[in-house]
Length: 358
Image 1 (cartoon, rainbow, N blue to C red):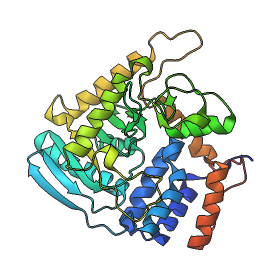
Image 2: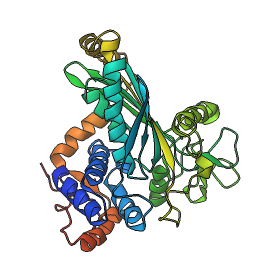
Image 3: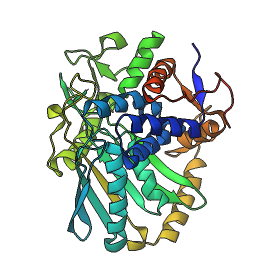
Image 4: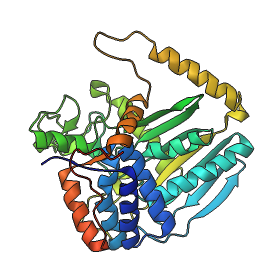
């Protein structure tokens, strides 16, 4: 079966209506939709609109509070804590990013710890929001255990992403958005469906032994292959900022995202850092310096048949394609959309397979 395609505008309206029908208030639905569309537009499909059925389920089940009353407490000139009231993680992250920018404009650097939040999707969406405001944005979060430690034989950290974005003069921001596991679990699912063997050092069986068989995978490996202590260390860094510094549960104590309990809040944490370049070299000089850096990087010698790219280049190119052709929606997600459309009494957002949506 071929992927269906949907325009970004049609998907945006569909996601918002589904979330509102599931019990989300207008700010929560708008934030979740904005984050999902960021990921789908840039080709990060694991964190795009395919999350909509999950969000519908946890809103209806009560795990995620659809009408949260977030509260921000400023603790110092450049720091504070946001209580997300177990609302949607995207609303919490965008709200924390806004507060971090306010703090940074006053203190040079603003840092906001997020408490009592939930799955927030693509970390890069929130870093990008700060870069679009002229700032340097850094975002990280933790999640339930699914990644073993280096030389570990059980799940410990989540995929614990770290993202950063920096404005560039006359160009789109430098954008890094990475998990600290070797691959996302969705890559395992893809290889399983294709009947392909996994690359070395990406996933393990229930005993922690690396396996190329996607059907035998019980946990992911940390980023770094034989040097996986680097990925495990970065995951720990995200854990410290997101859980320890905010007083939240650590990964092994968080209810699994895909578990049967969709009524109990997961009590997760996240962390946002905003840096105002005017507190340092100045915004204009930062953007000019970044442009020089990017031009120098892209002109660096490449291996035969390859091309050197900066973080974000691949994603921005995909965004250009999808702005014209629409977002591909895989068959499983398309079927789920059909069920959601019936629940919300709305139309599905698809064009015909392969048809341009620009």
